[in-house]
Image (cartoon, rainbow, N blue to C red):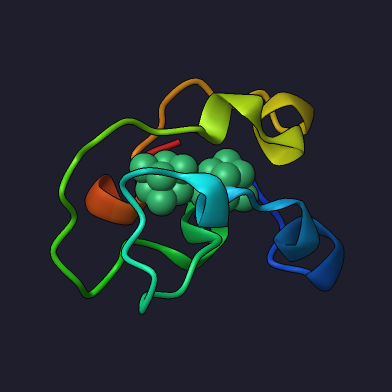
Length: 70
Ligand code: SF4
Ligand code: SF4
C-alpha cells in the first residue's frame, strides 16, 4: 500500500498536470492511486518537485508507469 494518503488535500498537491510525460486525457495522483491504464511515454518526471514527494519521503518517480513501489 502507498505511503501517500489518498485524500483531497494530497490530490490537490499533485503536479502531474505540469509533467511532460503526462497524457492530458489521463488521470493523475498515481503515487496514491496506482499506475495509469494508459501507455506512458517517458519524457521526464516532475514528482520530485511535488509537496507529497517531500512530505512522504518518496524517492522514486514515474508512478504513472510503474505504479506505487514505495
Ligand atoms: S508525487 Fe508525483 S504522482 Fe504523487 S502527487 Fe506528486 S506529482 Fe502526483
Ligand atoms: S508520475 Fe511522474 S512521470 Fe508520471 S505524470 Fe506524474 S510527474 Fe509525470
